[in-house]
Length: 165
Image: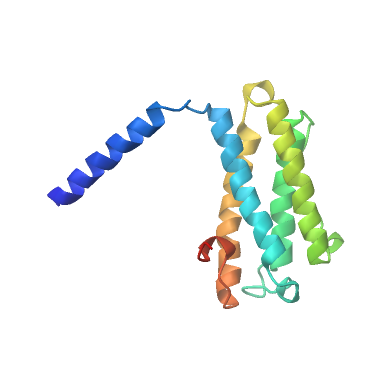
């Protein structure tokens, strides 16, 4: 136990030194980095998951992999529009309009780019609020975890869990 406590102290001191030497990111910068990080992970999954399994459902009453990707993109689209100052409601994109893997990948790429642009144009959030981005970050993160389940149920290893080359 004492060894663990010593290890934690050394780790904490090293982290403090490392952080002390670099500029601390603002809350908006941290949010932008984390927002893009999770959305890029979902994008990689949308590109990686086999097209033949895009309509796979964990249970019959659940969304298919494809429908989850479109649902995540719906949230990102909401953040992009709200971040630009549009008066928006959550508009669920129709999964039937994105029938192929290529359609879903293009959809994710489009809305990630638009949301990231909105964050760059208003780094402190429109009217000083980062709320739409915080909510969508949480939403994307929750569904990222769900997508991991789709991988595992199909005997696949999610991209982030694969050994690094």
